[in-house]
Image (cartoon, rainbow, N blue to C red; front, top):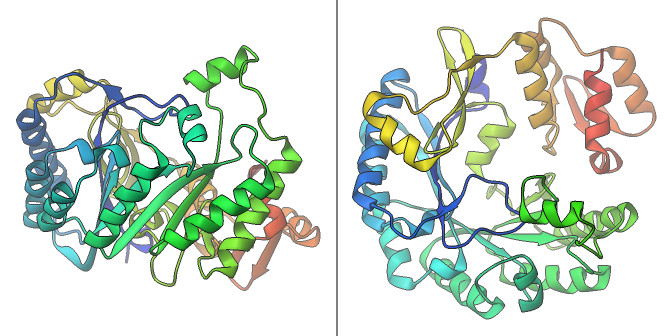
Length: 385
């Protein structure tokens, strides 16, 4: 009998924790370092890959994602060595997707060709804005012109290219976002990630917001209008949303991220990397220590992870719903019931359906356009006891 994770697939996430500068909105595990021993880091990743492979023998790997931080600061030889080892350690899907995140400031043509020759076949670029004033507000170290030049290099080197933009920025109007988004779509290859600016505690923006110094953020009504405009324009241009913040042409969805949203298994390697791993019939949440120096020093003793958390059936079912309802395809009710040991409350489903928040068709539940705007409230209703 197939294990549940096989419905979602199997992926590998590799976290590179270093950046040239820390963006004020970013709450990812990223660090600025004057000196990086690339050889030591390459050796550490290879060691951790071998440890992970020993736990997952024979699994077919569907996707690899180099995230960060800024993975385009990694030596191409390091990336190539990691990919070579991955292919040696696991059987891989015929259409294995290998994505590397890049920032425009770390892009040049020779480096990108080296990543491609080393096995990377998809680039995800953090452009974030297409005007210099907003790039400065976001703490980005590249200009709009540099971003577009870097994107041209990526497009000329790779068949699959995605880039990120942040909207609902300070002082941004509907008309300004309309023009910027249409400009982005004229550049786009096959995938766009479009995120509303979120103020996270523990970031520089969070501190400014708490002090009342982060002004001109959109109110709830404008945020909703910006979100609706984004979906309408992208859909009309042949790049519909397949997830709350992600848009793609046919068959160009991020296979790696779909593993998360379809609640597959994935291994996280590198400082602060998270994972979900099924072993001996149980599913575990994994998390590596976030401090780069601590993680690197712990590799030799295979002590890079915090103690694993065994997920209860209820935890798994909740995570499955939280992730899967972000997708346009929704989730399988029978899969939820198998994970949870019991179905969702039919009364709550009926209520949310009656008020137009969700759709239920045979075995699937999907969230409507209206429901997606208040997705957290929909999820809270479904999961309340």
